[in-house]
Length: 65
Image (cartoon, one colour):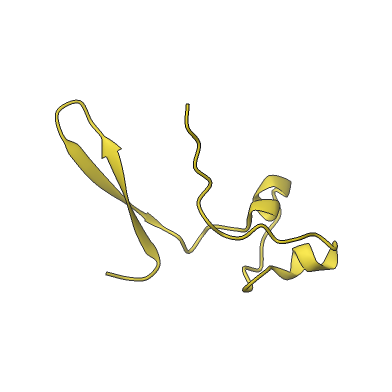
C-alpha cells in the first residue's frame, strides 16, 4: 500500500467498513484555517515561517461529537 494512504474505520449499522483517504491534498492546519495554498514543506511550511507562526503540522484533525 502507498505511504500516502490512510485507512479509517467507519462504523456502519450492520458491519464495520473501511475508507481510504489520500493524504496528498492535506495542507498544514494554519493554511487550512486561513484558506490559503500551503507549500507543504517539511517539517513546517514556509508560509507559516514567513508569518513567524509555528507550523502545526499536516496530520488529520480528529473531532468527537
